[in-house]
Image (cartoon, rainbow, N blue to C red):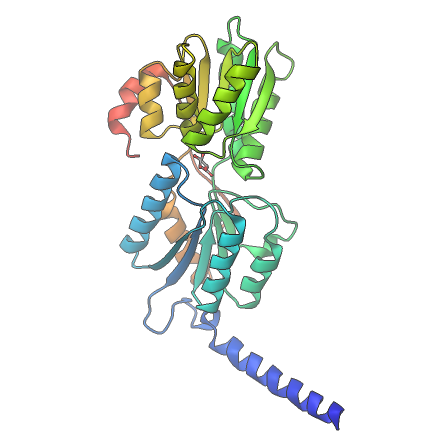
Length: 324
Ligand code: GYE
């Protein structure tokens, strides 16, 4: 008897599941759009940790509106658990597509498998994940962070003079840009007299960069160079260096990544010596890719953003043209 009920119950459950599946948003016509014809995107943002992030959020919101895409936006305050919750809620709401910038590289397989089972395509933007299962997302749109780190290291190699001791302000622990920018930089300075004598995370924030730099200035006897994984941490370090009675850009060389307005202003003023650009304006490309994915068109598995790098002189000419 018990067995019979169980079998029947399973059959009912299966039928319900199948019905759910065919009513899911992923199957709603070849355009992927819901009945009203409008695409709904769930976007799980990392947070609001930096000038780069603010520009990135603005670009996504503006370009979604311009593309007629209904955007559900969440800010995870740099916490993976919050991003996972947001993604689960987008799955529940049956959005047409999910895009997100993973705060760290690992730990995404379970939730992305849930999205896949619900037939909701996922696009990674800005940061990548570390997973063997490449079927969990359609494409990854973002920068080559190893190359950015390399550019920073190459410039230092050419312009080090007598400088030897580098302190590194790392981005968020476990985040793709922190891992890769470190890797690229280390590769570039390998075999030279330059050495990373201290390294710690400043979590990509200005206050984090300031705090870590204050501690370094107390504990590291000779600091010649600061390599900060983003402008904001570099700007925080500048405050700490000034407070310690030293001249940023002269007594201590500073190299950062991003090239947002505040960073470029400090570069033009000579307080930062070199900035490697990382473009936050990913909104337009993200919306175009989303439309293609939902129309069933092929998209490349990796879309890399074009970027440059600036010296102090170049910053002076470039600054008036900066959009972020
Ligand atoms: O460089 C930093 C931000 O993931 C590329 O995150 C992004 C990085 C960016 O907080 O400023």
